[in-house]
Image (cartoon, rainbow, N blue to C red; front, side, top):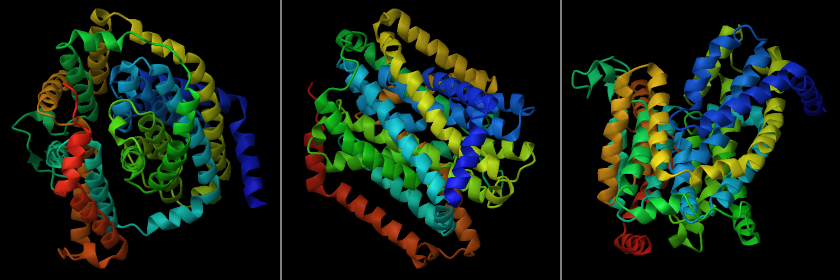
Length: 501
């Protein structure tokens, strides 16, 4: 009865005209920034935060939340069409989504992403409404040691993303972690790996890495092969999944939703780990592992479902604990504070209309996103028919403008060029950029929790083994590493993922 009353309060708040209007504006802007190369929800929320200062708190938060989960929808579009993920969580979607687009199946890939996102978002909203208090109690049991072990497990599991050598995958993860440590030390402020360049003191921006490694590198690779370029912009048909596609999508959507809902609750796990883990799980249990990386629809449906489920449930630690799971949630914390609200356990009791209104608006926003995205799939697909000589220079232009607008610093544009060339070299060496990107995103979190755990334990490294949850996660990480490194398994992986010359 309490839940019913709370939901009634939530929908009565979310269905107010101004709240529905700004929810629509939020998801529309979110979809747009997800589609446009080089622009992400973090920059958009940061830029639009000042204009919400004069809004009612619930209206402001509904709009900002709509931008965030709307971008999770839109981020898959450019990842599929032009292999350019605007968000780290969309990087894994590009692996099979773009391969499907190159085969003339961009429509089914986009539809799979939209259907999986809507289902996962709806289910995750229900989870958020029903299970927020108990899930928050579970998250409370995770300290720095547990977070370190969780992130380490995610990095080791991501080896499954790489085609070919597990050693190369480990090298890419390590390289990504090293790039993530560039900047000032998180505790002492001492510059690290900055080479006396002032622009590097704040670290390397994610957008520069993602756009360079996935966008510019792909353009450079396509310049080598006329057939590859033609495949990107032709053979677009069948804008809806076939019966076989729908059959293959169903189970990955369900599994991805469950994984995303669970991992999104944990601060630091979030949508990135969820999408990568979902992809790894689908590839491991698939009867067609050879198709992954070459156009498996399961590799789109599962990660996109996990991504959007985690995007919804990542609000649980924010609303109940006041802990931001990633930069967008950190901006949401700022929005709470600006409006005189302290995020944490007291929000549910002190601001019930805001708490339940925000939850109800997520379901409304998911409906609006389907109404926006499914009818527009044909428009997104038409991007593939744009001539190569126009499309890719335009991509580079938008990417450069979007990256420059983040800090109005030309150094970020130079970084795109650097990572583009690096990504091209790595591809030519047979290395995959996806594990590198995961290492870059999760590396700082790994370091922070490692050092926090050691500080709390006064330098006693056994803290990672004496805490049961942390020990269990480390055992799983070691097991995953052993399995990936077994010669028999490695030879099988090399055989499975050998590409035709």
